[in-house]
Length: 260
Image 1 (cartoon, rainbow, N blue to C red):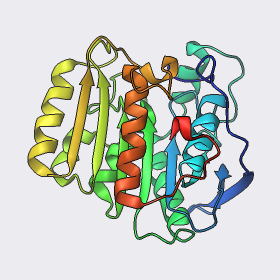
Image 2 (cartoon, rainbow, N blue to C red):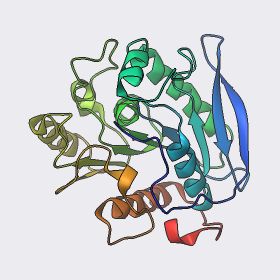
Image 3 (cartoon, helix red, strand yellow):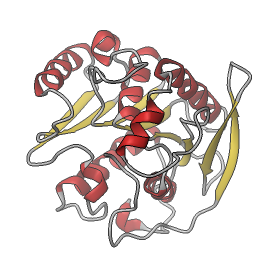
Image 4 (cartoon, rainbow, N blue to C red):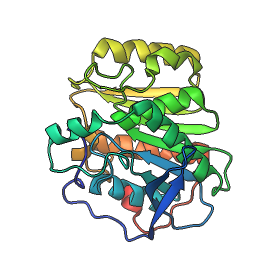
């Protein structure tokens, strides 16, 4: 499983949160959380894993806001509704109802919505697991993005009922600054798949960076101390913030500098 709860011992900054709706090309409205401390700040889209919007991602959105970004956390599963009960079985059953190609298009609409409200020329995306796969897809199919992908699947698992485009198939079109992380002990995907993807990505895009972290498995950020650079997972969070700032700008608010 991926991320549901805030990492132990970590507090969430007190920032303004707005419940909004994003218009989609289908005519539907996608619910989302918009976290902003400075109007017009550089924009970052957070794309959750198969558990969907959770306290963990609301926590990350607040941390990103204190780092100087406006943040959008959409409800990827708004068509399927909330989980009827906690646990992997319920999450996988709900994901089986998700058209993930359409979800990528939903995220594209969210990027456009953010871009209209940002003073910058690019929008950031940061995705996790399923969301990391979506982020890699967007980075290969859309310009003006600054991407962070945690444990995205170069080749989505065979059990995914309605998979998105395979990042491996479109890696030669990878564009913009991309930072990707995987855990060396991640048993949810084949190491050879990550190796082939990173080799092709590096050849196609000089702005591609990645790390495969020794001793860490899938979902490692969920147990990391995000404010401790000596924590291997926490160090990736600091590196992600730096990556977004380097390419988007963003001025820390000073509300919680330990995490920014």
